[in-house]
Image (cartoon, rainbow, N blue to C red; front, top):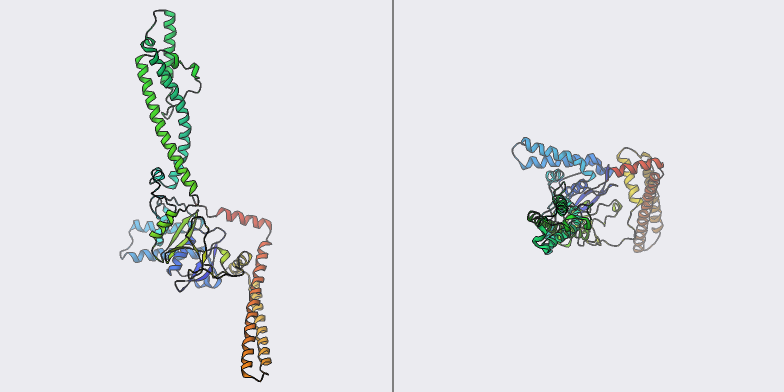
Length: 483
């Protein structure tokens, strides 16, 4: 895996940044760019010359920086525990190219998230990870429902709330039947508890009482000690409805009714919180809120650099003149020097780009996106790996021919102009001739570069279908997937 390099200026200083590959902007890329912009990392000359940095180059740079940083922070040698933590963090760096799990919390500020071992790598590098998926405390109902829970805990609560809703409906029906049984007993008075002297009646009553006791003892329990309804018992056949009850049975029934009411109340509350949380997660599915933007403004100091998490992606974030900006690392802007930053001032993604001076870029007829940037990246990658000598030879030969032609054309232009008698006119004609020649040279150079890049892109597209299929499968297996 490799990253194309782009040259920009940051705070009046030339810097190199890494552009994303087919796997998308991952945490390793964002952390490396933050350190490159700070000037704490410098890419090897070999990478700068080829225009491509391999994953091993990036990992080694970050590991060296982490070791150097921790060595400078402490004059005493590493303790065994600290050395173990550092080694564990360094071992995680290669994994960050494929993404990482982030479990944000919604009421704990921009850096509020469940601490995992992946975050230890950010600590070792001295790069802060922040997010803007925050809940406004003025929304008291949602604030109470969310509390200090993380994203994973909220998802679990939503699932439990759906299950609670199903239980509540069953328990309400069971409660209605029990209350009807109690009302029937109380309406019948104490006569319902008397035993008849008639043997046949007594036998029948005893049987009904036995049936009632069986229902009362089994109707409200299951393996989880939750109230449940006997699905095989119909209301018209329920012996508790028409059976005379003893005082002991009445007391047991009243206890069961009270327990059912309490359980229904607690499960209804869980269901209500679940619905509120589900609505919050759905409404903020873009993983950024205006309250979160406000908190990010308050949290970041001027010109600070950190890594911003949103929509399962990671980007380098800074604050300049009170405005938040994200570093643009899209490979499509590799040849657009006027596109460096993207404003982070809205939550719906409708924003604008900025140049290296954080100003709105001037309009340009064509941004060299798509096949041009991709072909250039592939060509640089091939050259960095010792391949593509043929392409390099063609480029050198074409450039040499263009230079010689422009040189001779320039000489002819000067000679033709020198026959003029007026020195002022001669100087003017020479200047205009050189200006036209420079414009022609720039145009032809650009056309030549584009043709070479198009050839490289066509060569990539012309690969066998089987090779393309396996490449896509490999890219998919290493994609940046974050939960």
